[in-house]
Image (cartoon, rainbow, N blue to C red; front, side, top):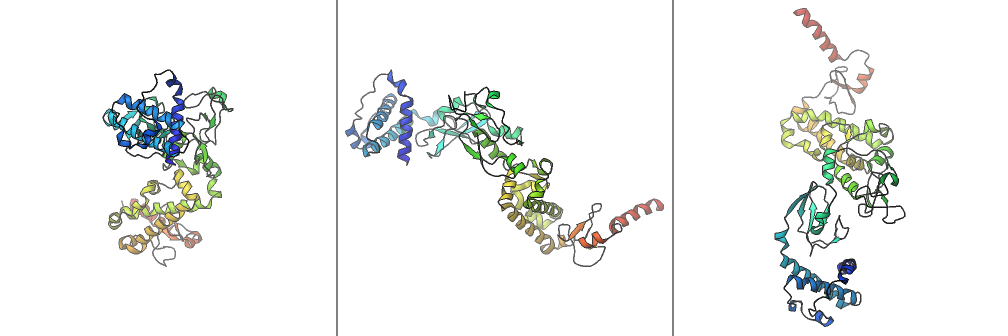
Length: 412
């Protein structure tokens, strides 16, 4: 597979440079005839950079001339790899190219991996890590050849995430090719739906059209379709939208009860998640005043979803995806059980902060997150749910507080 991929890349590279080579001088004969490949690789003695370049071109020509998938052609491919490695050593790229480069808010770091399964985001060709230098942006993971660095015109998507942390919540808001002047929305290359001169590909997230260099038919879950339709089927998006959605996925920027409050009426799992989150917020005061809970770092169970200990109405796209596949409900129920066990069974100090139902004065200690309790909205006292709804008088705790307020002026 590696050989066939390399051969295809070499073939495309030769054809793309064929016109340029027609007017150049004939390549230097370095003895690269067919019988040369039967010799050991170490016998090749070209050391000059220019000679190596000519030998590389000659070797690429021979690869095309030899019978396809033959042993001699495979030997030629191996020879080409050795020639390019030798050229890389002589040019000493490690000294010429820095390990870190900053461009258009990208922070490019030189890659040391020799993987050949990466694609350059600029020229859309394979990155041959074995013989080519390449960089990856540490912010948005944009990858490109070293030779393509100067041609980049797309700013880092992470900067957009930092300055614009909100989604497009209209489903595929198309404006039409005429509004784009029949040009790619990103690089302004002429495009059309007929594919002449370049195929127009629509991004389901932005609704706009892009050329094949900016839109690789990658797929991603579109937030607008999740919020309005509870639909999680991946749709085709452009490269920049794919990176933006990937970086935005863990960010809690969706306030569901404002965007689509009816969603809770149709998705039962969301109702369960909301109740678990509300209970966790009621448990939080116990933990931040309990030395044992602080030492055990119980709240770190939610370190991947920090917003769950801050509010109960903000959701990330990842939260909704995990709700749909049932993963969030399982993990949150397990965490809820761990938290409740600490408060009601394991910690005596937390147990002492329980409530006694002042309406019936019976039963065990009550906690605001128990399923069979109700909480007074004014004083936050806790009662049995049945007692609270059957009671026709004022909350006993609120009544005492009111009497106390009336007695203080009289004493003064």
